[in-house]
Image 1 (cartoon, rainbow, N blue to C red):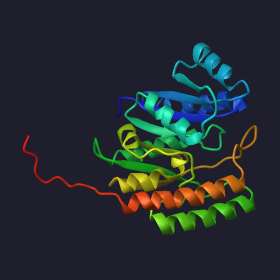
Image 2 (tube, rainbow, N blue to C red):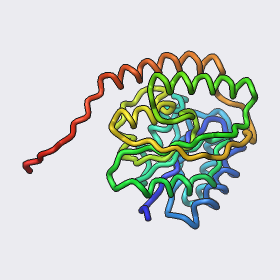
Image 3 (tube, one colour):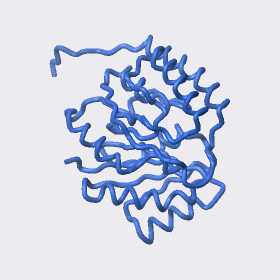
Image 4 (cartoon, rainbow, N blue to C red):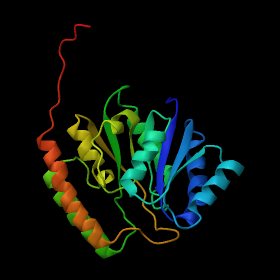
Amino acid sequence: MIALLSVVIPAKNEQENIEPLVEEIVASLAPVCPFEIVYVDDGSTDNTYRVLRELAMARFPQVRVVKHQYSVGQSTAVHTGVTHAKGELIVTLDADGQNDPADIPALLEAAKSFTPGQCFCIGGYRKNRKDTAWKRFQSRIANRIRSRFLNDDTPDSGCGIKLFPRETFLKLPYFDHMHRFIPALVKRSGGEIRVVPVNHRDRRHGTSNYTMLSRLWVGIVDMFGVLWLQKRAKIAHVVFDDE
């Protein structure tokens, strides 16, 4: 049994989605393992921070809140959350409720096959996505292109629910939008990738902070950046240590 699991959630203007998601996380993990929920408020302009603070003080001591003074993006929010997390294992979730916390125990079960100190990432696979047909088509094409170029062993790199050791993440090269390429970056570091089918749900409240064009442009630029990193990766296999 792990000492502590950290659930890291980047959030921007998600005030209405916070309480139901926290309730689901607690219900899913309370019987399974010790855990904390690290929310990173990425410069929200609504009441996200106030709702989080009130929940943490009144009902859920497992909730910890970190606030960015202004928005710096999802990848930096994830990085902030992992940096402040206390758990040896990290689970990331999107704040909009589309990821189902009930899937976390399955990811934890898959993690049992890895040894302490091993580098790995377990990614969710949204086999039955609750998106429009147009968005599913875009995602399918993008995943095929990314997989062909990066060979990252995952059919759904954009799925927000992932599990990995904190130590693994902190060794990865950091850059904006890196959260979309965690499996490729973990594999570049010599780690192993596993995929677990997960549930996907409609967003409860609010609207997405991304547009099709913004995803497309940064996705292309970043994919070639990750490919550049992969081509220059060197993994040392130590066979003798004289200490």
